[in-house]
Image (cartoon, rainbow, N blue to C red; front, side, top):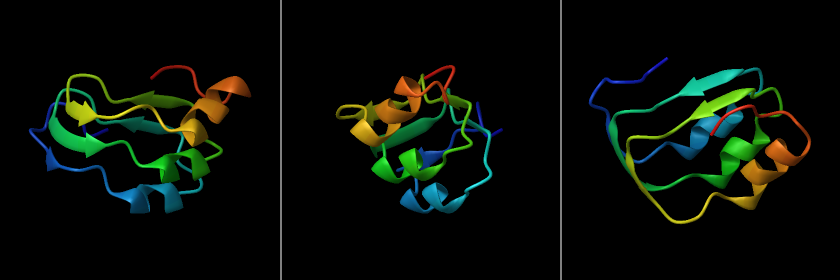
Amino acid sequence: MLFENNLTGSIPSSLGNLKSLMNLELQKNALSGAIPASLGNIKTLQFLRLNGNMLTGKLPQEILSLVAVGNLSEL
């Protein structure tokens, strides 16, 4: 869990390579830029918390697909 750590910059697209990741909690940081579509590659992801950042753009369709199949409980 990396929430409330004053992280800056963008979310690395390489996080999409973490195929066994279940929780990604990056809320309440200073992250900016777009949410990488590669996060949709993490089919085991159950919780994704990105609130409280300065992210821009729409939620990528790849991540919305995880929600549609019930793999993701929270955004």
